[in-house]
Length: 271
Image (cartoon, rainbow, N blue to C red):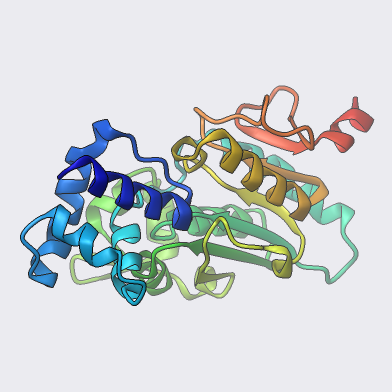
C-alpha cells in the first residue's frame, strides 16, 4: 500500500469514528481489511483506496470503518468500576423521586457484556426500575448484543459461575441472557462522535477503553458531550489507561476511586 492510500483510509476512519491510525499500523489494515478485499474482488489496499474515493461508496466506507474499530469486551471488565457502581446505585436511587428510572449508558458497548454486567449489578441490588442503553458504531456487534447469546469462552471471561447459572440459560454450546436482563437493556447503532443530546440525562455513563484511540481534540469533544449528559451526582467510568486530566475542566476524578469521574462542579461542592 502506498502512502497516499494509507492517508486516504486513515483520514476516512478518523472522520467517521475518531480513530487515529499511524503509519506503523499498516499491518493492521492488511489483516482487518483482507475480508473486504476478497468480498469486493479487489487485488490490493491501493485498489480499495481508489474505490473509496467514489462518493457513492458509502456502504464500503462504513464496512472499512467497522472493520478497523476495536471490539473488545468482557463481563465485569477491570472490576473496579462495577464495585463502585454497587456502592453508587443505592445512593442514586435514594436521591431520585419515586418512579423515576435510573439510566445507564454503555457507550462503545461492543457485544454487550458491559451493559449486561451493569444489569446484573442492578438486579443483585434489587433495583428493577432502570434503563440501560448500549450503543456502538458497528451494526454487527449491536446485533450480537441485542441477541444476548454468548460462547462458553465469552462467559468464562469475568462472569462468576453463580451469576452465569442465575442469569443465563444454556442453548447448545452457548449461553442466552435471561429475559429479566434483556428487559432492562436496549442497544442501538450510534457513533460516539454524533450529537447525543436527544438521549437525555444519564445517572451513569461507561465510556471505557475507547478514548485511547482518539487524538486530544477528539477526546475533549467526547468528554464534553458526556459531561453534558451526566447527572450532577452521577459517575462516568473510563478505562484504566484513560483520564480527563488535561482534557476536560467539566469533569474531575471521584476521590479515592480509580477510573471514576464526576462533574467538577459537584466534586467541588462535595469537597
